[in-house]
Image (cartoon, rainbow, N blue to C red; front, side):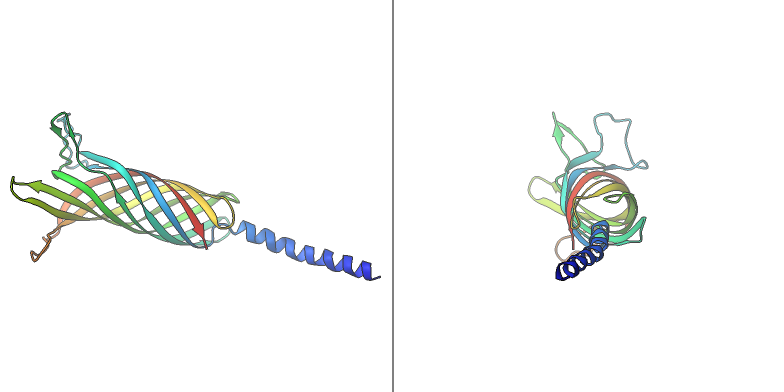
Length: 221
């Protein structure tokens, strides 16, 4: 009798625990997350200011971008919605090739920090695969470098724009995930941030395009 009761109790506990465990495993896209990001970064003069007639000047800079992001997602079943914030930097800068200067439309510049705040919407292609689109606000700095032969000048162009993108996220387990993502940014307004006591300039129009292909690895809490 005791053996029968013990067997029935174990069976009941297993029956209760199994759905709970399965539910925990399938809730792979809910909650706060943190991730590290690295990828390819390319910025260039936009279509309104490009100079395609001059083949020696491609007006682009490229390099490696790197940084981190925080986000929060809500799994609604087949659909996942979330918000995210990101801080990155980049090695992209203008180069001299065989004496020819790639002007980028602003002169000698180096990409600086990039802030992003936005949202994403995804659908689960599989229990552990999320396909998503994203969009939001981005603010990026570009360090303008110049030299008059005596003094070196460094001012930041502070740019505002929007970002859209799409990607795929794969849940390795309940907490760990990897992502691949493409995103496009366009910056349409800017100001020059002077160092020291000089006031920043008024905002002015710019046209900068940015393309990035990035990979991420993250942890969901």
